[in-house]
Amino acid sequence: MSTTNSSTTPRQSKADQQESMPVAGQIAALKDQIETKVAGLRTKIETIKSKLVDLDEAGVPPDEYLARIAQWIDKQAQSFETDLEYRFSSLRTAAPQGDFVSAFRLRVRGSNDNESIAAADASGMICWLMRDEIKAKLAPLIEGVEYQDGPASADRPRLREKLNAQLDTLELQEEALICEAEPAGIIIPRRIDARPEIILSLQLPEVTA
Image (tube, rainbow, N blue to C red; front, side, top):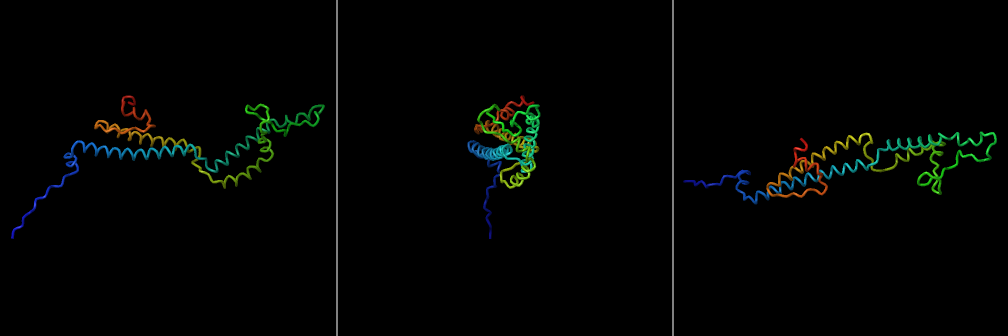
């Protein structure tokens, strides 16, 4: 009893398949690959940009918020105290000027700190009189407020530098893919906010040499 072996076609490797593929098909496949990679990079780019916006707009942590309030209260109190003795000066003259004592008279300020009928500012006087009480009452209120807080101000420059470095890397990778596609006649539109310095750094390498 004889057995006839059926002939089988050797399985082509991926490289062989690409070689046997018509040129138009190869270009189409390359276009799909590049577009997929570019889309992935652009998603990451938008994520980094969003983080940069959050870094600029997010509030400071509650402890820094409270510290800023305390600093402002101290500044207002100090400002009021600076000329407080002078405010009582009408009572130290040989002939006291009646009941005119400006110590606690509220200053009425206009848009340029000139006298007007604008709202009165009693911040300095109140902060000077009740500095510790105000801080004590504000602390639990601030700690109980819910808001979108971010990193401390001191940490933001370092974080911003790190994010900008990541953004540079991603945009350079994106531009490299766009340039790689052009010789094959594949045009990948650049983002409307693509940075000229990123584009030129690859198209004119001698500029950055």
